Image (cartoon, rainbow, N blue to C red; front, side):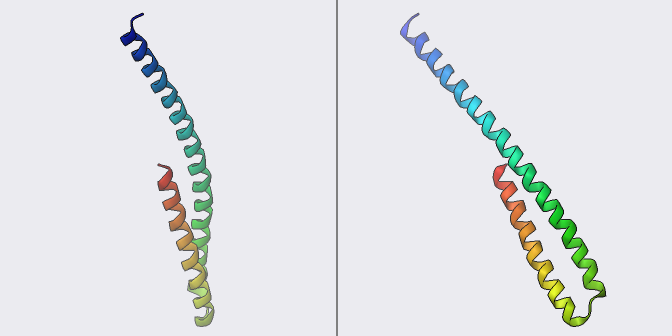
Length: 87
């Protein structure tokens, strides 16, 4: 085998190794994003429940429920951003 063929074969081997490593990283990122997604879905349901509570709460209690809902909404938004970073 001449020198050019050897260098090309080495390059192909390196590229395949990089490809395989990226496939593993992509798979792990999908798993992490899926776990995060499940957590966010649960928080979104909780936020919807808080919103329903807000409708039947007194004025003072509605401020507490509203503040909790706002914090929960921010957590959900941050979770979406975390998932987006995996993509």
